[in-house]
Length: 92
Ligand code: SF4
Ligand code: F3S
Image 1 (tube, rainbow, N blue to C red):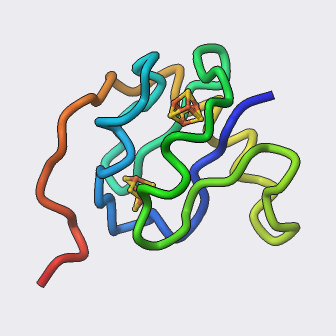
Image 2: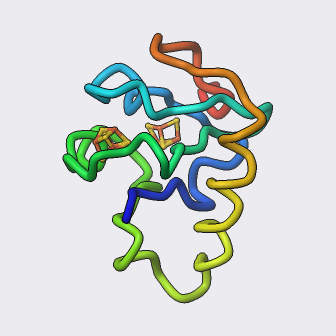
């Protein structure tokens, strides 16, 4: 099991989540971040950090976003680690 970043992160990327992860499980894609399920220890620390509620534990991912489970796993394998906060895409 792991935590999963879902659609609210898309074109937003607040990155508040990445700084609290104790195991550096976040990966940065161009339009959103992903969690590497082989690294995440399900600590829950990132969940309350996201202002748009994009992060769910795998078993709690809403039905409409179930495909994000596979997407996080696939994209995390290809994207670089992110541990520092950046300017969000969605901030005006
Ligand atoms: Fe990192 Fe914990 Fe979030 Fe997993 S649940 S990505 S280990 S902060
Ligand atoms: Fe995305 Fe929320 Fe993190 S918008 S980058 S999951 S704080």
